[in-house]
View 1 (cartoon, helix red, strand yellow):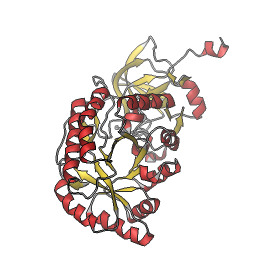
View 2 (cartoon, rainbow, N blue to C red):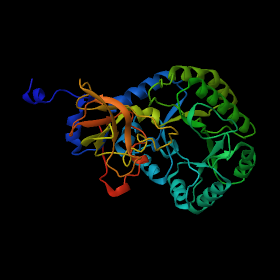
View 3 (cartoon, helix red, strand yellow):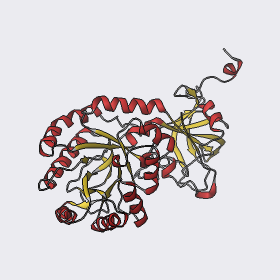
Length: 402
């Protein structure tokens, strides 16, 4: 046993590495670290439950770190992107263009040009996008692959963010799709498939099961008059992860078992059409941590404030300013003393001059000292990339795949 170990009792282990060693490797705080083994475990468990016919795509918007994308490129069947830059990351990772889908309501002319030139699947979300894609195909001398993104005519409950069932900028309303299909048949484009995205961050298995069933029914109805079946149907994802006290993990086994009920019907009615499950947060969200350092502590009107060098400019979601209606705390620990005996109730805040910069409100933690590490769990998705990193011009966080 080394003297170094005796001086530094073991702290939080992250893929077998002590959090202090991670900080030394990063060379600074704050930083994000993503666990390869946790990503592998999640993908393997999911593969063991999914029907063999179901392809698995990673939605890059959840975490666009290049190292994460390259790592997942060897473990998933394709990528879904929401910008030309994400498309470039997917192509750089070596994925076939036909295994990449580009969705989003506001694709620019340059975005579409790059997508058509690359040969990826362009998810059209309006007749304007269809016309632009067609014109670009003529100009570039290629036949574009298009996917019709559907704004479904059903709405589900229990999802963190609903993406269909009402007026929306996303996708094409169901009642407008027959006319769009007729227009598409007159143009020199290839219909690669359909995309139904109904919501995200859902922890209720029954909700996902019903949403997938309705999505399949909808696609079968819309595709009934096509001269040939589409190449694939992207059924979105929606799989959530628990963030807050009282939440329970999604029963993924129940969701995957239910797929066996509707897959035979899809195969019979649309022979040769491949179903795709598109997941982001579910694959990487629990594989990441955000680590910042305590730089001060103070008592104000009876409340203890632990002040860190991190904050909402790096991790907007943990501050409660990224979609939460009522602010709740992400799981937070003292990384170098997770089991400290002397405990206190405190408020963990960032370094920014705004009252919104809060990482944890009224939590019980081991008594925090200046120099301690604050670790925010469940930080592998929508962390750095979804945050205003240039707000107040503080240094950017490091990212590592461990």
